[in-house]
Image: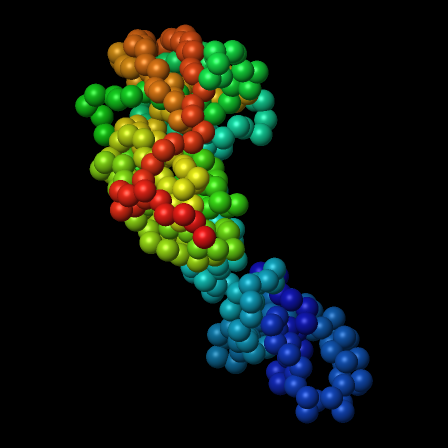
Length: 331
Ligand SMILES: [Cu+2]
């Protein structure tokens, strides 16, 4: 274990472990002590290089007095204890963002989209999958509302509608849909049934996130800037998410039956790998639009080709407030 050099000295009373402060009463003797403090660690280094030495009883005895400290690079016993209990340090960690492949917003790079479920567990075991690698992939053509092909074909979610007879666990990672600048960010999140989505309020004012979508209705009530609330979605389908204060806010959560889904990049390409052989319905859906379906046959050891043409979705939706009434004028 590395030890912070300042935590080594013979005078336990004047120790400075990380996070501690010098005691005022020791100020008069500071100069000689400072010299002593600088030289002694070197003199004692072979013996105390680990910040500890065996006592008369043979037990390890600390030469410095551990004091509470904030997590830091040194590995004093207190910090080590904190590291053993991750709950104490999670507050300093940024909240996990949803994985890029399940966000339907444009991908930052033009790389081909990856199978969304690659890091999740509910699929076949690797050994079983490697015996019969099979996949489906292809391209999505995205057209605007006027029927013209779009150069940017990102944000289309391609998924297998159902795998009969198979049950899949929820995604392990909690997903996130923030409220930022009076918008939901990302505007679309794809998950599997049973997955939890966090709704952090990153604006300086209140929001009231809710949904009236059948089977997934919820109301998170008003909550302030910096707060977050969560919802676990149990029913498959599209969940329209709104704010009861700001009628223009609209997000969508696509709750899927299984983890075989992915989101297209700018090139419109998609690939779903390690799909168990079978006959399925493959779906391409873009937020605000209608799903486009086609049957696919996945055969052992083969890659099935598929192509879609999808019409761009609407960017706004008429809706009521959470009481199923018209919105009052926002003040
Ligand atoms: Cu709002």
